[in-house]
Length: 215
Ligand code: GRF
Image (cartoon, rainbow, N blue to C red; front, side):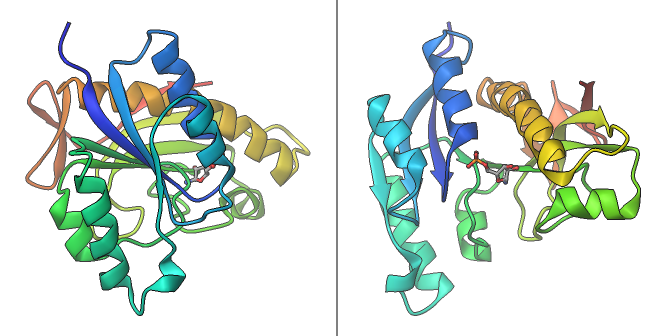
């Protein structure tokens, strides 16, 4: 078996996606070495999840720094002590500076709760309902300097049910996320999916559209 990819997971909150990674690794279904869980929020419940799973944790609060660049430099210094090969943003509620993104170029993944390029930004579930969309879901993508705009890897789609509320939709989207995020990360960790010249490649072939799974 190939050596597991050294991975740091960055969170700000509950960490249900983090838990999906922990469960997949513990179940032997994911060849990642979860070397660090990092948070900018000391109250993040995900830190407890990591501690329960025996994963090292670190926390640096952005409010202690005068600007984004100095905060990001401190985060880089902390992360690099663990020599991560892959960074997983899992509800990490900070915009990353260009310096941060280029330091880990092609090695940062994010999950966004919408079918990108539709609905970047916040409050996606309500916006999808307001727009009258028929489909919703979540997208795993490489992180680039532009928010929610990096090359897409994998998308989980679900049909919106008549009369569904945004809370109900959010719960269904989260369940999809817990399946697609570890799967997509495994493909990057194993080298099957790569970031090259601003694009995603699968087995060396450029892909402009993500793989799609319907739930
Ligand atoms: C997820 O819905 C993800 O799409 C977004 O932030 C949320 C994190 O949830 N980026 P959790 O902390 O993993 O439960």
